[in-house]
Length: 227
Image (cartoon, rainbow, N blue to C red):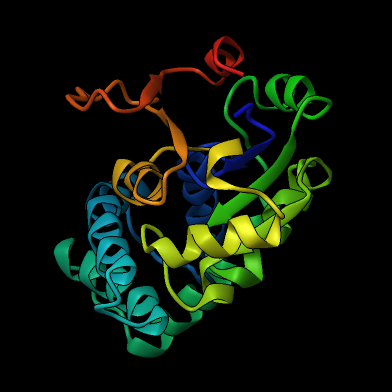
């Protein structure tokens, strides 16, 4: 069946999470006078953040634990003494300031302009519901998308099939006329494949991918080759 619905992940796929996150930490640390070398902090924080997000996807930790523990462990790792109260303030301000930065991956507008007349476009995201729409509005891509499905609204997270089944139902789409585009093989690609959708992996880091049951791209422009 011909593809009619294109579902995108948001963070790390269209919205440049790492760049925007780095800028957010710089703003928060300056505001709160946190005297650390930003690069030293980010070097330990980023892998910790990935680990905690994996636990969060797997329903092993709460949203609150994710937001606190990733900061606490990062500060501990660089031996920076900081109070729990200040960690809580940083966690709150990080979420508050993050969506106001609006860097997107190269060619995002080009690709969305190309796709919009041909397909219904949607977002499926594990990101926190209170900031995902703000991110899209700030970066001026919100109007491209018909439906925005957050895992929090479903009650489970990608790759749980319930997220994709709910998204298909909300969009009035079927697995056969839909495709998922995202950066996470585990959450986006395997999640989509297990419900019968096609998938395109955004492999912007050039990782070695052995699987052959999905397409892989290193630039958003390559989407034009498939859609």
